[in-house]
Structures are given as structure tokens and as C-alpha cells.
Image (cartoon, rainbow, N blue to C red; front, side):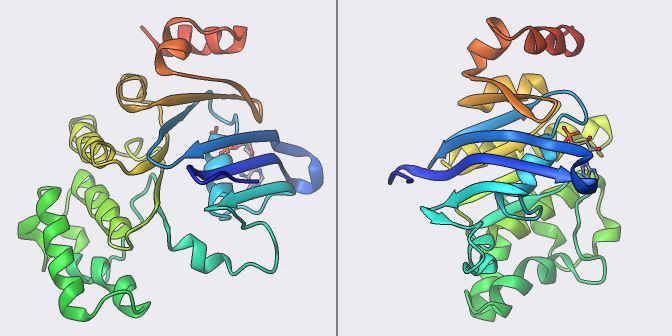
Amino acid sequence: MATSAELIRVEHVIKEYNHGAVKALNDCSLSIKKGEVVAIIGPSGSGKSTLLRCLNLLEIPSSGHIYFNGVDITDKKVDINLHRRKMGMVFQHFNVFPHMTVGENITMAPVLLGKKKQNEAVEMAKELLNKVGLSSKYDEYPQRLSGGQKQRLAIVRALAMEPDVMLFDEPTSALDPEMVGEVLNVIKSLVKDGMTTVIVTHEMGFAREVSDRVFFMDDGILAEKGSPDEIFSHPQNPRTKEFLSKVLY
Ligand code: ADP
């Protein structure tokens, strides 16, 4: 069972595709505390994104349990939408609504779901945009934004739901190199404010700097978990060592 400081618990999760031909997750277990920052690293195809997507049931585990705030969200009787609202998700490819203005992108969900009145939502949206350096963009359409600005908007849109955790799936992978820093800085400021954060990333320097713990995934298995110093300076698993020798240079 989950303890009070624990926000997410994953127990023996297996995720198979193609009727078992692909085992994307092979008996993964982990626990994440409130306020913790976890970076998930590992080779391409090792199951990082599947693991992250299982946390809010964008992918349904083939077996195993996932607890969020102490509730078993893999229980079919649970209304997953209620819990998903407390988990902000940011994808590689922004996923902002192109036919809505920046302001509408941010205010739509909180108003529609009755979390905020329209005027409160507008006020909050402006505050959040100001925090991420987009205060002048409230009435713009996303097509007028750069990739980095779109991703900052995607982050703000997720934050507008006042989530308990932010899940980032390679948030800078689709960006031109000069825009990576501005997005990482926004994530850093969230972390500084105490937001529980799980991030799949190839930005090793960033993972090392901001995370409390690093999970190394290999072939569907959580092969090694540890502090950034343990994983990056003293990896124990030969697969971790091999991976890092390829990506750190
Ligand atoms: P990573 O994020 O580490 O690159 P993924 O979680 O995307 O890895 O994928 C893990 C494995 O699961 C890979 O072998 C991938 O091809 C497979 N996979 C992921 N999604 C699907 C899917 N929808 N259908 C079939 N196979 C999938």
C-alpha cells in the first residue's frame, strides 16, 4: 500500500504489444514521493515512454498495478479521468490546439471542467504565461509561435490544471538546439517550486543537474535506479555503463 509521502507506486507492471510479441515493460516496480524529480534515461526502444505513459494510463498495463495518491488507478472501477486531471503531461510534439489562441488553449480545460470561472482562468493563464516569458502571446495562435514557445505553452496548459505531478516525454527532442535551453529553464523553475516531476530525457546534463533520482531503463527493465551521482559517476550495471559511455562524451 502507498504511504502518505508517496505519490506514485508502480508494482510489477508488464506491458505487452502485438499479443505478447513485444514486451515493452517487463516487471517494472518503482515509487515516487511527493516533490521528487525523477529522470528516466536509457536507449531508444527500452520502454521509457511506455513507462511514463502507463503512469497516467495513456497505455494500459497488461498486468500489474499503478497507485496514484494511494488509489489503484489500474482498478477498472476507478474513473481514470478524475485522476488524470491531476497529472500534467507534456509530449515531444507539443500537442497544443492549433485552432485556439494561446489563451484559449490554457483556459479551456479548467473552465470546461468547472475548476475555474472564466475570469479566474484568464487571470491564471496570464500569470503562468508571464512566468514562462510568453506574456505578450495571450491572443496569438500557436502557428505564430516558435517550437520552444509552443512547448512552453504546452507546459503552461498542463499547469493550468494544477496537477500533482508533471510528466514530460522527451520535451526537448523535437526542438531546434537553440530552443532547448528555454524549455529546460522552464522545467527547472517548476522543479525549484517543488513540483513532482517525471521526465524522459536524452539531456544527460539536465538529468544530472535537476533530478533527485535517475532510473535507467534497458530492454523493458528498470535496470538501475540511483542518485544522479550514483548513476552518472558510479554506475553498477554493465548496461548502464555501456549506455553512458555512448552518450557522455
Ligand atoms: P523508448 O521510449 O525507450 O524509446 P518505447 O517505450 O517507445 O521506448 O518502446 C518500447 C518498445 O515497445 C519498443 O520496442 C517499441 O517498438 C514498442 N512499442 C511501443 N509502442 C508500441 C505500440 N503502440 N505498438 C507496438 N509496439 C510498441
